[in-house]
Image 1 (cartoon, rainbow, N blue to C red):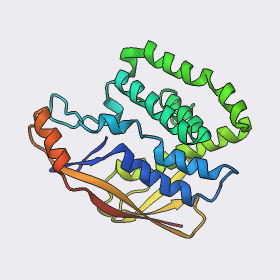
Image 2 (cartoon, one colour; image 1 turned 60 degrees about the horizontal axis):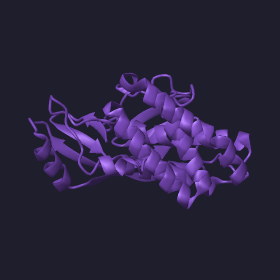
Image 3 (cartoon, helix red, strand yellow; image 1 turned 135 degrees about the vertical axis):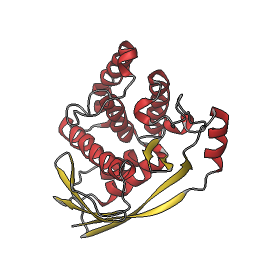
Length: 246
């Protein structure tokens, strides 16, 4: 789950809903390679493994919903493995990109996002390193079977990271009003109003982009685990319109 403090409530975006927004960015991206359809699928399904965990999301000792960067890492490794396998069954190249994404989470997106870190990863560093080695050790065989060039898979991996990061920019910030510009890697976001921004350099094929993000709002209050699970399951999802302009 992606959790944002929204004043008197928690804004919660499921990882799968975040991925739907990432898919919209991927589909509209102007710079695309010959396997663009697989990349769009990878964007849509890159966090499918989270669906198991999010059937009963957790709260911590302070009744704050446990966000994706703070999840118990052995659980994350297990469900991410399952997600990679399921995606590979549908599209081997999409599965390769999601495998790279999963390993890259623990390697700061292979150096492109130095601030990315799962807070509990150092507790089980040996397990993390084994997961990354397991994924990376299979790339040569996967690449040969798919028949994809090394240059293209890395280009598509980095495209996937932009789609993910653009979506996270909307999931993790307050978009109720205009705000100060901020950077997502080499892109500058200039918030223009509610859920609306200008992006420079502009990466999409059309001069403006209209998407939607599904979120849930839950009140801040002391929660037991069971109470939070039931309230979360009953919370009505809200779709907000997301606009990106040149």
